[in-house]
Each structure stands twice: as C-alpha cells, then as structure tokens.
Length: 265
Image (cartoon, rainbow, N blue to C red; front, side):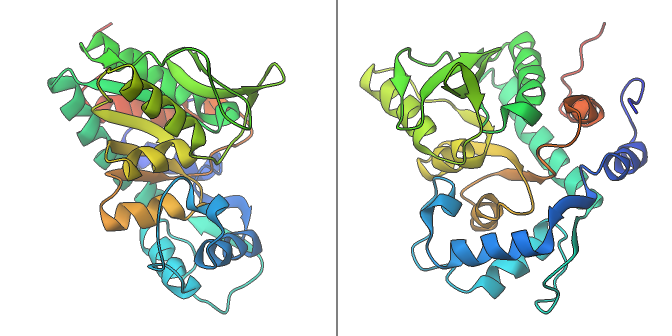
C-alpha cells in the first residue's frame, strides 16, 4: 500500500480512495446526519471547543457546508447508506494547510501540535513537528501537571494528547487545549503563533484567537463551519482513523513537499 517517495497529486488521490481515507469512507450517512442535527440543536459536545451561538441552528445549512467543503452527498433526502469524502477536496485542503505551514517555517514561528485522535493521527502530527523544528520553528512545550475532567494533558513526540488510565485517550473536547493556553498565559509565556490539531484541540485554539489548522472527519462538522467563518485557516476532510496509521504516510509526504519541508536527505 505505501507509495515510495512523495506522491503526485493524482497518485495521492488514488491512494486516499484505495485506503478509504477519502472516497467511500466507513462513516455511514445516518451517523453524519445525526451529528449535524446534534450540532444544530446546540449539543456542545459537537461544537468541538467552538462557540456558534444560534448561527448554525438549521441542520440543512450544516449539510450544505459539509457538501461544499467535504463532499458528502448534498441531498437531504439521502438518509441511509454510504457517505463520501471527495478526495480532490482533501488534497485542496492539504495544499491550503501546506501554505500555512510554509508561512510558519519562513517566520520560524511558535507551533503547537495536538491530537484527540492519537490512534490515527499522532504520527502525522509528529512528522510535521519534526519538519518544522528542522526548519527553525519553536515547537511549543506545554506546561506540566495539566488535567481536565477526562484525564491528564501530556505531550508525547512533540504532540499534546490526553492520557487516561495509562492509555492515550480519544477526545472531542476543547478542554485540554483550554488547559494548555490558560497555563501558558498564567506563566506569562507567549501563546503559539499556530496550532496544528484536530477535534476540540483545534476548535478551542481557533476560538481563542490563535491561528489553527487541522483535520476532521465527515461526521465532525464543527471545524468545517469554523473554516467557512474564518475562525480556522484550513481543515482537511478525511477519515481520521483508518485500518493502519501507515496509510497516512503518503498524505504526510505530500503535505511536507507542498510546504517545502522535505529534508534534503
């Protein structure tokens, strides 16, 4: 399955479809629509650290944004079956993300990486952090001793994660990012210039006014709504937990190449 070297755009699109990172993804339509409805009904679990007020109270408006930015079926009468992520939209968003990463590298900015999906995306974030450090960026070290109601906020391989019961924890919450940013401010340390994350880690950072880019699945509409409003700078649509984390390697290589961050070696 791996693609040697850095794939072309066409090779990456084919790979995304074959591995079901995009194309016909595992997330069923009924799950997507249920999440869109819950967000529209004000269930804050689905707001991913963002504040929407009553701006997205119509689930059909949410569906329209998801069709435009993710490529899910735009027919509101299609309620059961297989839904999709358009791989061309995935690569378009990767290129927008790459432009922001290039800016961070050129400015040697402070960058914070975090994931609520460590089983799928931890190594994607780790590779980005290593590349930006090599380019002269300051990878933010989070304060120690942080915790939320769900667990402890740790940092592994330069990536902030939630730890619970000696395991890395899947979380949608924005509370871990809130804990980090609040602690940085309390210690009079500068906030990141850029956060690269997913789930509530990305959402809360953007809501707090920090430049934020990241990844989201087709059943997590909040980050795409925030991108449409300008609160987040780039959100990549993908299945965020496919069969093997190695399936993301060609995507990571493409992203690094587009950002000008591939090592010469």
